[in-house]
Amino acid sequence: MGLDTKEYDAIIIGGGFGGVYHLHHLRKLGFNVHMFEAGSQLGGVWYWNCYPGARVDTECPVYQFSDSELFKDWKWTERYPGRDELRRYFDHVDKIWDLKKDISFNSRVTAAHWNKESSQWDVTVAQNQIGGTTELVARSKSILCCTGFASKPYTPPFAGMEKFQGIKYHTSEWPQEGVDLKGKRVGVIGTGASGVQVVQTVMPEVKELTVFQRTPNYALPMGQYKITDERNQEFKKNYPELVAKIRSTFAGFLYDFDSGECLKATEEERRELYERLYTTGGLHFWLGTYQDVLKNKEANDTAYKFWREKTIARINDPATAEILAPKVAPHPYGTKRVSLEQNYFEVFNKDNAHVVDVKKNPIETFTANGIRTADGKEHELDVVVLATGFDSISGGITLIDIRGEDGTSLKDKWAQGVWTYLGMTSVGFPNMFMVYGPQAPTAFATGPCSAETQGEWIGQCLSHMRDQKLTTIKPTEEAEAEWRTHVNDVGKQGLFSDTESWYFGTNIPGKPKEALNYMAGMQMYKQKCWESANNGYRGFIMA
Ligand code: N01
Image 1 (cartoon, protein in one colour):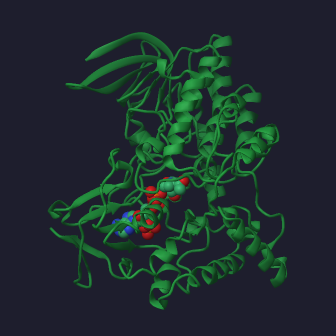
Image 2 (spheres, helix red, strand yellow):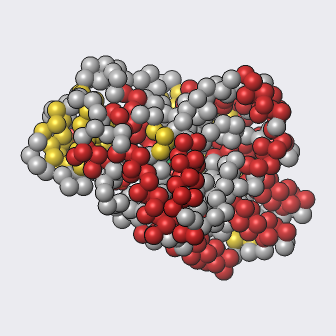
Image 3 (tube, rainbow, N blue to C red):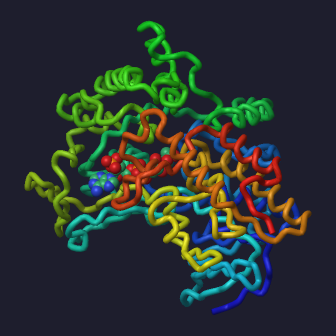
């Protein structure tokens, strides 16, 4: 085992939006920072998720850092950029911010133990090199877990998986060199954002496509278009206003919920708004709608009815339409992550595309040749795509053996539920910060906006500690308990908590059901964080 003899002020774990921003920002503030990244390039989910059709569903110019230096020489080509363009964006950021000199790639942090004697973190890193894996221990005053919310893939324990003779991959473990699907019989399990994108992308090249759907995705038309040079120029011209707007909305978008009330609107008014939001494309019909749609079942029913009407009009076979967009909504509209689609529903009009409702007809077992469902049918497959999601939000952090002051692991501390203060710190784990993690806006905000919002706070906190010659910060038990209660109280408002989803951890068997995100919006979150900082870091003990 090697020892990194440098002593860092901060070690950053992960090179996605969160890690990249913190490396740049903390360095600018004069800290000695190093990043360890498991992949061979920057991007985080945009490195790992190279499955067919991977694409962001936040429109540009929102999905980028706000630094105008970065945007000056950058042009977006599509309203919703694809994975390769996003990877190129990370390379561009690296070039302008000169990041790589402080990054070790192919370096997975496996453990971080608080060393009481030195008041530092001992960070164990497994480094993949030609000739094998070596272990390194690095020391740092603080650690920043920038592991993202979708870095621990989830594969359900289907019976007989080992018997399958074909190829199978989880979407986030797709080989970087790709998989040849031409002329193959392909099965896709899961219809979340990843599944929808895979299905609509691979359809033209496969011989036969079978989609195993447990819950329909209330997907909305993406409304993709090319971004012209003129449009890019316009963005640049209005950039300060765009950034100000992004920083003022609920989710860090350029739009917010409609100020009206669904149930007070007339039928015509409602129809007019719904048509406008739906045809604008993107997530407008979800996050630009009346606020009561996500709070009141009667209001929500109007949104589901509208979405269903639009959707079934695109599907030829009534039985298939009933599986993809059932008459009775399986859950309220928008209480599971809504995805953006490009001709997803039309896929099922092809003779060689099939959807299997695995809620009614579950997957019984994998066989050597494919998948057998409960009705006894064997679906013969050459390739299975596991688009089955993630142990989201908290899973990427607890994957690392993090041990705090008394040697307890964070995984054990969180076995019955997540405990944080402000979604960034946790009792017993001094000088550990979490970015884009649990009990923060995370899945209800964009990556870049979350990174900058939390980064500004963390940067100021570390600067304050340096100025005041303080060595440790940790939250109080009272502050942490209050935050947990507050996050869960907010999560219970509205219709979300009645729906099974990864927002509440219920996609993972045995994971406690709780609000994993702070769902009161970015503005309220910022207010809470700065209230603490501006009142002498209320809720924290600094020593
Ligand atoms: O994962 P998911 P994802 N048998 O958890 C099904 C972001 N993202 O990778 O809904 C059968 O949403 C499961 O069914 P159910 C984005 O935030 C963004 O698609 O639990 N099916 C579901 O259909 C997204 O929300 C982008 O009933 C099983 C699917 O697998 C998040 O990442 C692109 C099953 C999992 O869907 C995660 O998306 C990709 C079982 N045993 C991802 N277990 C963009 O920006 C699970 N499923 C566009």
